[in-house]
Image 1 (cartoon, rainbow, N blue to C red):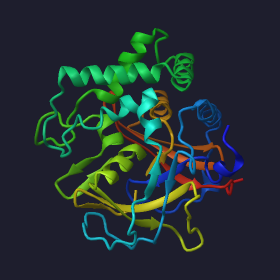
Image 2: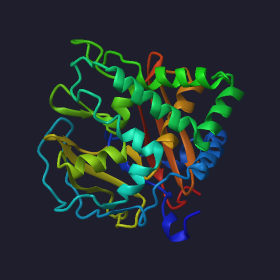
Image 3: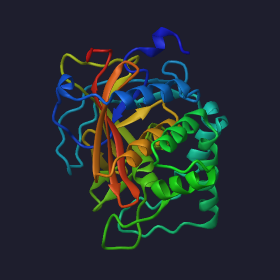
Image 4: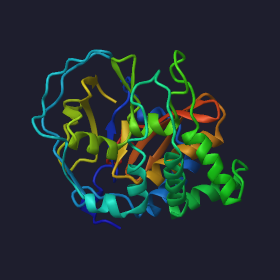
Length: 313
């Protein structure tokens, strides 16, 4: 377990990479205690999680200004990248991270452009699922889902269920062919109508795109009394990607792919509503986790921070 200094805030960094939401009173939200207990167990089992200050370093810099949704003009309040250092050796040698990264270039960025999945890409998808299914995080998630009658105990059957949830192609833009899947939207990101960023809820993709200079961090977003620093574990931020601006939006940073997929898969399978929001306490944070269905697959999934540093207690 990491030292106390590495566990300030939530024990993970939450970057908001989704849409703008009005502030919520965390105290007024009903906590799902069963899922809180389970997700804290998964958090402790996540031995592949990156540690802030050890495995990655961030530089929050200046406060970003207001940008309306759909506008692609944002003043830059950060002259340097958000990530000043990431342990790339760990990204390349930890199997779930390395196999995860192989999937990030398998998709057409724009919705409306049909995806064509090659046999090699199907193999990469399966190898990634094999890797996460071999972790204690996903093994515990599988046992929970079996106990709830939502998954079969047979591992091959469960793997097929995960493939449908995350990699089955579907129409996001009705003007073209099957142009999207849950994995692409949540972990890779898409562009919509040529003027809007959709999805993009993953910190590894953020780092890699920033390193490749496809992404430009514009600065943090926060209330005046909530100014973050480089050791903080919670950030709201603004960025551009391939010339399009995300005014503010959400993702775990530091967490492993298996932790995120376990979290979202559990919520997806134990609920039947098109859109499900659960409020949970994980480590020192209280957050909403939102999962939206697209038939038998995930349409989107992301966390939304409500409070950190145990302020909800």
